[in-house]
Length: 476
Image 1 (cartoon, rainbow, N blue to C red):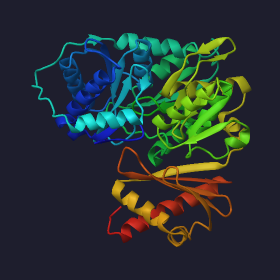
Image 2: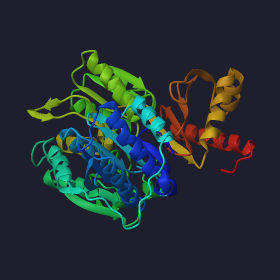
Image 3: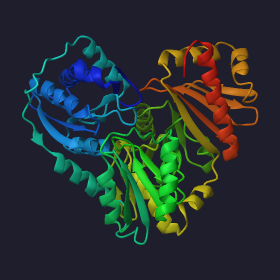
């Protein structure tokens, strides 16, 4: 188990067997020792729909109750809803979720009373966890908790029905790929409130790991089929814990998460954008002041704090996966949107769909109007982190190594080592290799002038990764 780009991640069996107990105890001790909370204070707990999440959440409740906290259950709820509710109540919280990673894995996201923990907090919690033993909980042993699920859902619902003008989506038909995201009912209720005709699609009783950044070929096929069958204006969804949006146009073609973030930043009239190096390189060309960070919400949050300290007033952060973070209150046409400095799927979904109504254009036409370089990404799963790090060390060791590895892609012009290895080729195409921060996989991001060129470069990148690991004796 380790902290990744957003929260703790590990095998479900390890979390159930003792990891959840250790890290929940470490989190509770961290809150007390840092002065962020006291014994007797409330802590709010939420979870996603994974099979292992109820057991992990029950363990966390037991451990935190034993430390003297007043534990409140928010049930199966989107992560941004839990974060908003706990911050409004000036209390800590934790969310049991593995987000988009495979179902045999899970994780925990931690929030102090002032919001998402940062990298320094993670280090302190990890150090405390190293000194902590797991607590044994009998099968029939459960701690008494207060039920706050209704209040938590209601607060997030009310936030989202106050973002846009009333009935702004009248006449639009929007599909909702419900699968197993905890945001599925909330998305449907909010869109219906604004007047959209909602078409439920693909609801699943078992957990499906939908990654909004590396969308599977199966999901792409579903989206295209549903779009054609139901004649929708858009299809929307979210990842497992509802902090990353998925928006597809009227053809079922997904929009990049960084484009969704850019649309939202425009809507909010942002005077600063904070986004990782993996987001589209064309954003700066549109005139926004941009701060680039490493991948992960803690790094984006740190960048947003720097922007506020520098005097910016409308600070928006987003990632290539679509998660939208709002550092400051923003007023749009008399409606004020309060800060929510953690990933949120709802605001990008609402902005993207509302643009269809406002511009009276298809979502595909709106997408083309931004004229950004074409970006694509994918991943190789079951790619050990150690193998990824060995590869990057090899590529960084010499220009010859890098040039040889990418000879099928093109001539190397420059490179960026901020997070992984991002290479600009002589013809200005970009290829970027980055180990995942929360799963044994490596990601490949590319940019090119056309879709065909981007997909071709992505194919070359993935093939080179497979060839390299095969030469090292691996089987991928």
